Image 1: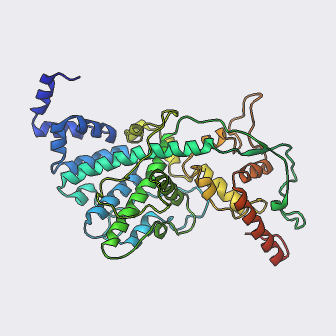
Image 2 (image 1 turned 120 degrees about the vertical axis):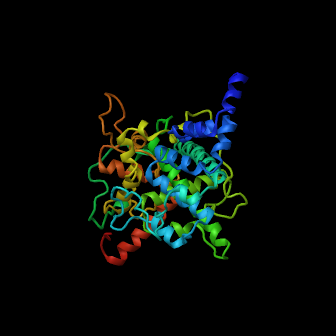
Image 3 (image 1 turned 90 degrees about the horizontal axis):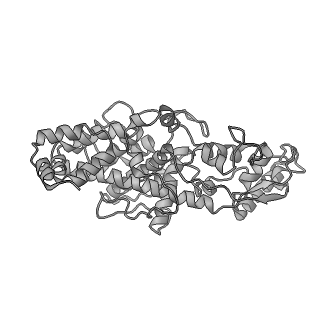
Length: 415
């Protein structure tokens, strides 16, 4: 514990020197800890210098896309002019960039340079917050709350993955799930399966935590817009923002919404007016002590401590989403047209490929050790294992629809 004399010395430091100390902090987690433990620094930060310090620290701790989402959320909550319309925000933050094709892992463009009327065209947090240091302090608290919620979100979906029992083919056959034979279409093939319990994974990566935060910030932005619209007697819900064409980052938003719905014991659409706009999310499931979780401080650590490859993969669609695109669109798939929600319930919009390898759902990029389980080695095995993750009722609906399509066309229907 710090001696009382040292505490007194810290309290006697001039504001200029405290500002210099705070300006040298390059981590949101460290900044939050310092302000929590040092009342004098918290008082200085809550003055007009707070927005500048917060903007500088966010840029050094968060990827550019997340900083843009934080800025847009603050702009909507504070109704900074020019006021953003829900349609402009939806097009700028909730829909894929023009030219991006479904399922293709293309880079996410960085925020555009400031312009007068575009969603990403804010002049930064200092412009949005003005001299409102109190708002900067509350926004900092919200960044920390969402980071904590992101780690709890990852734990929730890790738990969901431990509850499933997928299946591997007992006897792999090359001619299983062939395309083009109307007498034996892929969805009518039968084969014996061997249930297995996927190995547990105890730690989550920085990229997975950033995806969870990105989904939560999009959800926070949607809620802020819904609150703003409610003041004008306009009703908005989550699906106003998530009804566009399939896109991997859209499923991050829905994954975050499902998690908060679970933690708050509420339906999927958690967008509703709240009294305190800065206290969000209202309830977060406490982290389990049975599983080693990703510390929230890691998500808000300086970017220079994160390797370049990790930051690069954050700009690509997740392996789970890309594999679902193949499962839903391949002509030989036994569940062609399957929606993403069965896999979203397992966190596949967040997980890296390593998680899917651990769960034996994709071929290993590195050969397994001798005697180890090889996972899925062929396309037929891959189809069979992923099909086993689809609930039986949904599989029946898909098979009946494919039968109707086959009867209506007289041949196997191609997408």
